[in-house]
Image 1 (tube, rainbow, N blue to C red):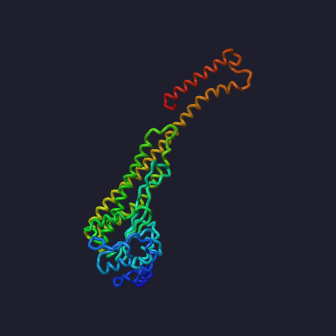
Image 2 (tube, helix red, strand yellow):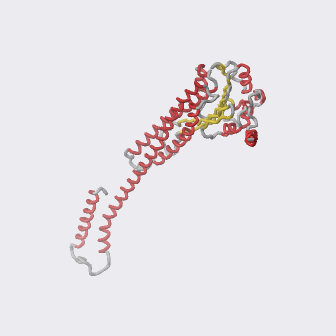
Image 3 (cartoon, rainbow, N blue to C red):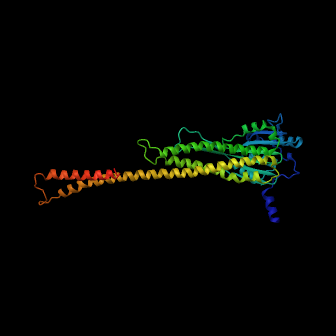
Length: 371
């Protein structure tokens, strides 16, 4: 046990204890913070306090400790230096801070003492006039959320998934926002999952388009099987979608089912709705993957059938051509004593035999569907 305590002390040297003052680190002296902070606000009784738009995280937390409420700090792609002061100010775990700075994390939910660390993968549908073998269908980003007793810190990576509209929508619902940081966490989760639903509908349209093209008559000059590149590209994009949705199922189940001190019981009921929507999207994504497998197999089967048909036609014509080749080869040999060699009608007879045999073979093959 002493070894475990020593290890925890080594890994978490900067965790804030309950009796540690918030002004232990003055972020107002750190000029790098402002470049990463996109919004910093204090909320009390569900309303944003006035004259706090330009305050620093340090000033926001001082106000929270003096007047109550909670602070919501939004950051966009902070560097280690830019995030270091905020991490010390709020006592964030070094491992969670490392994940938040470097991004490219798997969706997850972790608890560090009095802080919940949640990672969401945001998905954005990339509009395109025509789906090609190189089209980018979905674009991913990340939103990390640190949820404490009296603060919420959101860290966003990527050009998509802005939370500005979400913040304004929450500010228009003071009753929900009065539930504290857990209400913000729920709204972010709901916002991300709603994005999944919209992207799933658009991806479904792309799959329908590919499916129609595969099973329709190909355009003149377009061989069967030419859609394989588009199908494979779409399958790669669906796989990226799946990586964002599947790992998030367990965290949403925990937030909706397991009682947590940092989650308001009333808000926990809302997480059930988010978990249900996420489960539905997950089923759709799994269905997309299976459907694309079937479409790809059908496309390859059609290409194989087309190749077999071409080979049968080639073989049929080769069989027809073999008749005159054989007869002409025989009469092309330089022997003096050959049947009908000096007969007056020998040449027309040979041509007639060649024509009759070739016509018979052609008719037989055509009747059997080879030509």
